[in-house]
Image: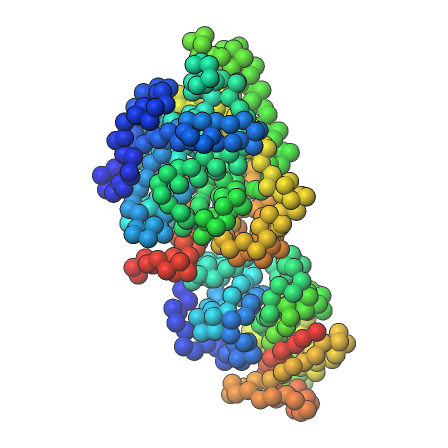
Length: 208
Length: 406
């Protein structure tokens, strides 16, 4: 059985960035929570009321075994079942690009959460740009290991694209970070163009 | 597991029946304990009938801890009973959840105090239609009031109160047992820490009512049923009850399971006989299921219990919105369904999950892959057991109980 560490001291760096955006003693929904690493960390280190949605049986099993409340289901169809304003934060980590209707998912997240946290791979990252430019093929890397024909990532976007969508939807970006390949994070702030070149991932804290 | 592996901590064990001033209906000869409750204050049923002197037969396993926080109540299904661990006293078959309950098992009797009682309306010691109506001194038969899942749960609450347990760590059950688990969480949320409804629904579907009606009509069309008074005429509607069981049994399986088990294989013959013998193995199997069932089950009890299932609809009292029934509940839920269960399909279990989420409840849900149909909840399904055990472990931690040693 997959087991989540009892008292996680460290978690993946992008998950840590998300965790740092979350206030203690809040209600959190992690949409697509995998084996519950982030939720478990948040529960144990920040005493949050941690809930999750996960599509895989193994993931749900690992989560439920570590005391988390997780529902097996599809983020795309199941978010609508949650009442408005029922969470302080709704997290979507590395998943928006795999949604059929990312804008609708974001709308649902903003409906049920006071804030949303979204992390995504940046398709305008310089290595991705060079791969496409020089190889002429869809980029495949350690972080994006799929071929074009089997990738779940059907809606790749860039940091700039996401910021534009958030603006279109009238959302306020309270905090935005990008992660470079060394795994260190920087605030996007006004250097959006630079972030769009050098950020391998973007992490955004949004509110209505 | 043998009986002596399990520690019993039961205040009523060996208590003399009849010492409570209520006349004995029949001598209590089966294993376990039977108490008479609702002696002073009647049990008021949903039908507004009041029952006094309600007998409840039950078994327990494990030991109640000092602060009485480790009780798991297991609710049995339509044709189950309190004999879920040890071999059944009538059939000799292993208990219906012997995979699940015992030392070191999912419901770990080394750590939990486990109770299973025969439901109200049942026929294994708890008050039901085959008992004597104290008002007339005769068997109730069809004069027995129609009972509901809510009534069953209120009767179980009497037992829990009698055992001086204020709060249950968990209420668990599959099928009709799952309905009781939901009903417990609904009626007594302050007395339930966690609920595990398995392969169930918050209301009976038209299809399920239809199947139950076939069963009831099979019983009632047996001339030996005698309008419910078969005992008075020294008869038993065996054929009707067996047909009811055969029809129901099909709904507990899946086409895949039936095909795998029997296919079109013939029973002890090389060719069909051009007659109506049980040529096919599946026919022989169903006939066997029917004929063994009648030895341990009462026909009128079957009518009453299936009726209770049909009437079940928690949302009805809340304008049809299930979420209102569980609004802001403190109970932690684990709902589980099985992919090949067409009697209580995932869709209906998901309706429960959706409503619990909408009500803000703490809920987990897993759809377990299995081709064994509704019966999967009774079988050794590793994924099902792992998630169930994991949930109980997580709840134990939240409740401050000791987790299983790694």
